Amino acid sequence: MCLEILPMPTRQTYTVLIPFPTGAGHWSTVGQELELLDVEASALRTAGRLELTSVLNATPAKKATTKKVD
Image 1: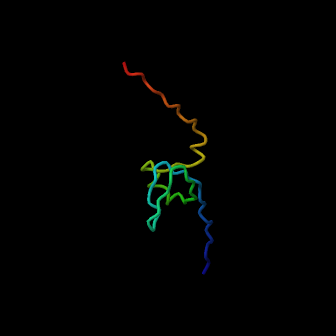
Image 2: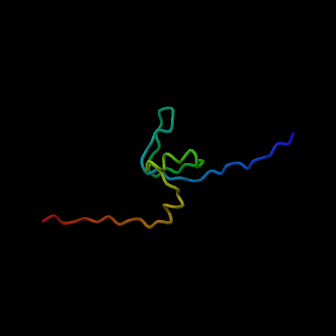
Image 3: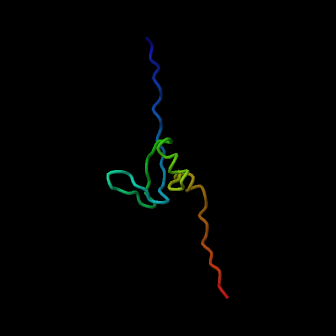
C-alpha cells in the first residue's frame, strides 16, 4: 500500500473589515490581521467581513469626499 503525501495547505493573512465572532464569546476587531486557510476565509470574504491583506495594501485607499448642502 502506497500513501501519497499531500502538501500542507498554506495560510494567508487577512485583514478584518467588519467584526465577526471568532468563538467562545470573542469577536475580531477592525484592522486585525488573521492567518486563515482559504476555506476558512471564503464565506467571510463573500460577506465583506475580511479581505486579503495583500489586496488591501495593493489597492489605494479611496479619499473621503463631502458635499456641501445648499
